[in-house]
Structures are given as structure tokens and as C-alpha cells.
Amino acid sequence: MTVQQLTGAPPQQTTAPRPQRSATRARRLGWWLSALVLTIGALAVLLPFVFMISTSFNGQARLSVPFPPQIIPEDFSTEAYRIATLGIDVWRLYGNTLLVAVVEIVLSLGSALLAGYALSKIRPRGSKVILVVALATMMIPLEATIIPNFMTFRWLGMLDTYWALWLPAIAYPFGAFLVKQYLDSVPDELREAARLDGAGELRILMRIYAPLAKGIIATLVILLFLATWNSYLWPLIVINDPTMYTIQLGLASFNQTIGSETYALPDVNLAATVLSLIPILAIYLFFQRYIVASVASAAVKG
Image (cartoon, rainbow, N blue to C red; front, side, top):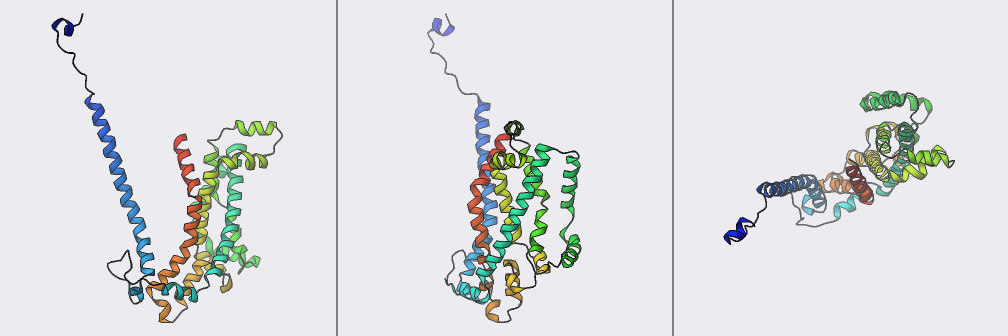
């Protein structure tokens, strides 16, 4: 018999150990701190865009940007967008930039998938050296290659053509590196089984490994689209025909060649900038779920 049964004392109730409670409190505190830091970071990123959109619809910004900035404009007006669309041919600039972006994305993604697959699964002799050399080219700044590239395309007679923008996109070492790193985590047995069934390397890549790498492909599409959409220096050098201008060249010419004070107003410039951001936001929202799935998959594998 126990001591409690002999003495008739009620049994003692056990309590949860204090270290476990303190660990739970620490986790909750860490969660709240993380949420606070992320909220502050999100506000720091979003507020400038909110102020920009608000000012573009603010009729009081016709003379100067209001200070302090207003989230909700007091004098709501769409006149700035009407003036901006009259000053620049938005649809033509959209079409030119989308044409350049689509071809560049196809070329860059194609080369990245082929190179990443070869370096990860085929592993030819000297593949490690090839990867290191390819990554080393990323350390060369764009300014150091502009003059040689310009002289090359001038010699080829490709100035004032989109080929001067498309051909450099074939070399995409960063994309090849990302694809290789992702495919390294995919079992090689899939390739071996497909080869036993008679499939070639290109078919294995497109039918087996490419569908598994949707997240990485979506991420590369967004990165390439952002880079192409925001590209200014290289198109400025090789494109002189105004009918072939991309969106950034169109915005620059809108701000520089228009001498009228009507187009120099702050709200008009901000309205033109907002118009240039619409396709970027649309592309990001479309591919967002693929990026989230890719990040979640990488976290599980990690």
C-alpha cells in the first residue's frame, strides 16, 4: 500500500513542468516578434507604392507633391493619367517590351534548363570547371562589357533591331546554377528508368524533370521579366528608333523630350510610372502560387 492509502491523505496532483511552460512562452514571444518585424518590413516596402499611387490620383499634386504624403487623396482626379496617355503611346511601349521580354525569357529559360540538366544529371567531363567559369562571368559588371558588345552587334549589323536585345539573353549562368541546384535534389533513378524505356535526354528533361521544377521555372520567369522590363542602359545604346522603344526608354523620353510644363507635373510623372508597373504586378500575381510552392518544397527538403 502507498503512503497516501495508509494515512488517508488525498493523492497529490501533478503539475506541468515549468521549463515546458517557459518554452511555450518563448515560442509565442518569438512568433510575435517575427510578426512585428515582418509587418514593419512590409509597411516599409508598401508605403512608398501607396503614396505614389495616391499622389498620381491627387489633383493637389499638380504643382508640388503634398507633404506629409496622403494615403487617401483629398482632391481625387484622373487627369494625370489622361495627360500621361496622351504624352506616351502606352500600348505600343507595352507591346514592344512584352515582345522583347517573351523572347528573352524563352531563350534564357531554354539555355538554363539545358545547362542545368546537363551539369546536374549528365555530368560531362569538366562540368565543375564549366560551372565555376560560368558563375565567374557573373562578377563582371555590365559596364565593362557594353563597349565590346556594342562593337560586336555593330559589326553584325544588328543595331536598331531586337536581336541586339535577344541574343545576349541566351547566356544565363545564374538560371543554370539555380536549375542545377534544384535538380541535384531530384533522384537520378528517374533518369535511369526513363533511359531504360528508350527516352532521350531532351525528352527526359521536358517530360520528367521540367514539370518537377515548376517552382524554379516560375521564379526565373519573374526574375527575367523584371530584369527585361526594367532594363534601360543596354536598350538605350542599341535602340535609336522611337517606334522600337521599350517601356523604360519611353518613360525616359517622356520626361526629357517634352518641354511643356504640362508634362513636367509631379502627378503626371507618377501616373506614367504607375502605368509602367501594371504588367509587373500582373505577372507576379499570376506566378505567386508557384513561387510559394517552390519555397515550401525547398523548406521541406531542407
